[in-house]
Image (cartoon, rainbow, N blue to C red; front, side, top):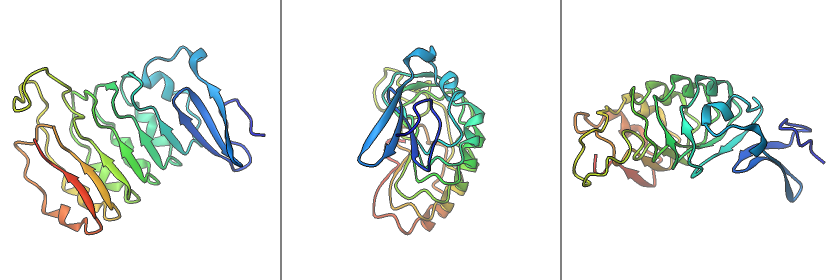
Length: 200
């Protein structure tokens, strides 16, 4: 059986999921509850993540805090899901070091500083999902056509390097009024469905 101390063993795939660690082995999973860690912010929890983790799913957990720059050390991660939390601060440029990423969703948060990092264009293995919908500025409680308090962003042309992406490109519900759509997005020729830039 796999170890249950938050470490990868025997080539088994380690997953940081809701409630703790899961090790995929055979036809089942082993779990390690993280409730005893005392971490209720994302940056605290991420500081304890083993560098061999391959998937992180902490969506819809009401996590606060920021994404630490050390996330760039998790180069084995293929899926990072942090959507529907209360994360703020800026997106670290170190996200671009997670070069094995195939699925990324940071949407529905409250990132309040910085920009969309150009380094996200380095995630050239992304094929399944790129999610930054409603990621910046949060819900200001106003009507949908009121961008007061939102963070004005631009779409970096480097996102045109995500040429393996086949579906689910999400930038909707951010304030992109002052951004043109880079012609480089035309390089995403494998896209089959769901490119969302609406209400921006």
